[in-house]
Image (tube, rainbow, N blue to C red; front, side, top):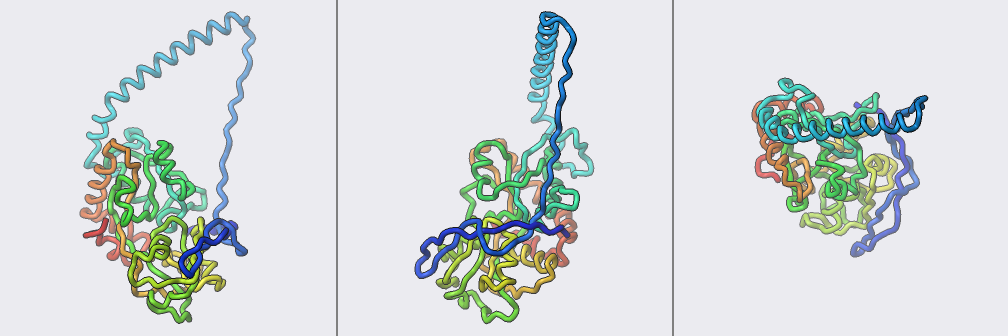
Length: 337
């Protein structure tokens, strides 16, 4: 489904956690995999004009004045019609909307296969990419995707650099941190262990070493023990790069890893490994698209309606079926937030 990537994951200093300690940071003694992204740089070359300086200066001034007037006129027209054009596009599916008619939204995510990953051409693709692209087209928008440092998502939204963030992003427990569109899918946060492990329940995690990705729900649950069935663990490794989770478990550096069940199923397929996922989940969550709390444009409300339409008209089931053999568990969003 995706090519392999290579990166160094580092584990930094330890933070006290009761009898346990939490290891947070970006370094480690093992190598993880990651995609190398390449960017092309365009160079603009200006040629000199063989004219008298005064003539050139006047020409440039006149040209600049004309261009500025034209831009202002265009901006005024597009600004006055933006709401009307968006409203006219609502209710259509993506196949009925021309790309030129859509307003661009800057969307941030990190790599979270199969929801978000890069293909052999370096393009950002995946289940969440397909879902959001379809939903936004129905309400008059098109996404411009970019990979971000996940830990900086809030400040990128607050600064306006991003319009929204997504990528298997759990709404549950974060309801008051963002304006949410969703839930569009359901997911379980679970614990995975080696098939030969003696860990069979959450209670068996007592005095064990567990790895998670930083700023995720599993990290919060294991740190704060918000699930009453979670015992006191020995140590928590919190990686900024989630691709460190698989090698950490396979190489025996940790006793268990915790993440979205869908991510772990993808790892099994992509890396040819086998986990035993505990029957008892850490948390059942709804996935959503997050906007800044101060974003009052109402896109979150319209996008939520588009997601609901896609769940009803079969679009969501069709898209999920492209990535998972059994889409049913992902489509039951009732009661989730």
